[in-house]
Length: 487
Ligand code: GLN
Image (cartoon, rainbow, N blue to C red; front, side):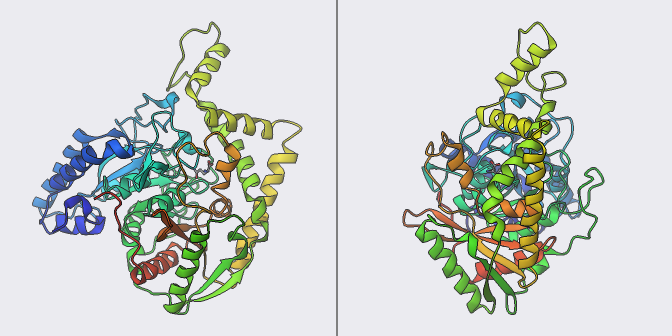
């Protein structure tokens, strides 16, 4: 039998339910895997050993009592550290929240727990989820498990690296402009950004509220479906969460792609793309055609405006969301400073890192009187055009197929001093957030340096099931998923 930490989440849960393995054994296996590999990965900010073992014991007691402890019974998982957990430090990788212990659970954290999952760690990310490499992280960088000199991607780098390194069986990340899909692609795991409103944002530390969405990172498509199943659905505590019923994502995996129409967006094969990324994605397209899908070119003509639009809207929303960190109610309060204004200033100057400050200033500027119409309003208008591009494409096709990023994982330090180049990493992921649509990233190859390449599928609103179905068909016809870079 393979090591316990190698099991997929669904296999692990099935074994717990059949009493072949206990939740406590799985949790201990995850904790010892963490001890063994964490020094070379740096994915975890807080290891919840005591809480995890206590939670596992409860699951084991429930199994012994003949109860069904849920879809993810006894499965060790991790959460991006912008997801609030009652009694467990939640930092958003920021100095300003370094010592913050939330008094309540985010809905997604509570739902995973209700499904029987065992939280073993809070995972590193870019500060307030602003970044593409997990280098804008105040409490330490995460390394790519495939190559310690490379970034894990971001902003949910810890969530992707922990799954790739088999420290946890699955995790949650958040995706405002690519932050689940990009690290999933760089680390060779599956990551899904659900439709805006499919998953509750209650208790998730806000970056840009009109785009933020939580989703799973997993070792394969089946596990991603299972985790999404556990977290999706209406939440009365989040006014933007949808009332639509949640279909069976697990059942969707069986459908195959025969008869499905896929669109290949012309604008997503950008100049300067790494040739082996393009070659792998085109090979994946042929694999899906061989399975019975038809593929046709489509156009998303406003793609070139997506980055500018995204940075205006997200920075505007961030400047407003981050106004709450004032040193008064919670979070860091800097010493000294005679007046209230000085206290705010010192606390925010000491608490926020450079990228967060850059965005607060950009956002404040874009929202200020006299500039609002030229920047924020204009960006909202372009956002509508971007959404319409997708609507027009989806009049002809069931899903879109594209790369996740123009390159594989870049080197640590390579882009950190050049924000514009860093922003370009998201060129193929952010449009879909502006349109509110779902997307999935799954492994489709390795480049010449042996680094994972990601395939992206983009779907119609609330059609996660079709994306999972295509992804499962591709996964079954290829063998890129479920490889682990660290034996
Ligand atoms: N890299 C993008 C940014 O820096 C996306 C971040 C995200 O999706 N949270 O904003």
